[in-house]
Length: 360
Image 1 (cartoon, rainbow, N blue to C red):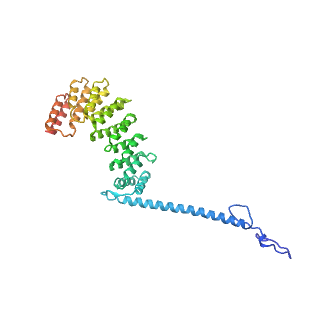
Image 2 (cartoon, helix red, strand yellow):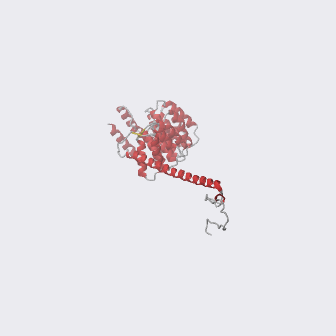
Image 3 (tube, one colour):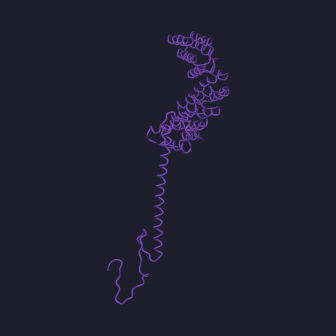
């Protein structure tokens, strides 16, 4: 007999159709009979079809989203083909696409185009969005890309970015990105950031990070109308410093504030047995906030027996007179002539001649 047929003896009635066994493929080798088996098979097949449709839908949706994202990115970058483009309207969603793509694209030229587009983007909350993205180390990227993001923030120069810059500088795992954050914060920092900046100098192990924090504080002191308060804060940090590096930096910083508090600490440091402190005190005098301590440099030169320190004092005084300050011409000439009296080496005398030539 062939498969699917059965032998019937002559004269024997055929068995009712409903009693014949039925077999269905449902992902199993088991057999079942009747309507319940057919229903199970239908359910199984329907489930498989539904899953297939879902996966196909996800694939199509994903492809559609990627196509839309790519189209948006290309459209945004086309806008900076014109090198003079500026203040280009940008939504937060568009900025997020730019940020995400810039951290992952391998082609440097493409990344540079994105940085430029972010630099000229105009829209609500963009400064906070860019700075937060750059400063958040959970957004994994190579240090050089993060540095570029901070350069974008620096170029945008918005105070709204400041909290994210200071936070990253305090907690960064890479010194180079902390430095980039501090550079971006240099023209933005306020008195509210002073404690954090002094803390970076006190506790950060990177000399470069410490130096950049110093530059931020120096810029702050030059812009501030509360220099005496800054001097007091630096004095407190100086007196509680726990290592030589931070002690020296705090002492140097006192020059950027000027004032009686700073002057008293610097004079005391000039009398110290610690040569590093004396050099730092001379550096403070060389960057003094006004001209009131110039005579202190001259007096130190006249009395210092250590030739290396005397030369250091001369270098700081020369640097001080080179500063582009609004000085009376005759007063400045007198200062150059007073410094000339202390010039002992031929190279120092040449510097004096060149300096006087610039103002005559």
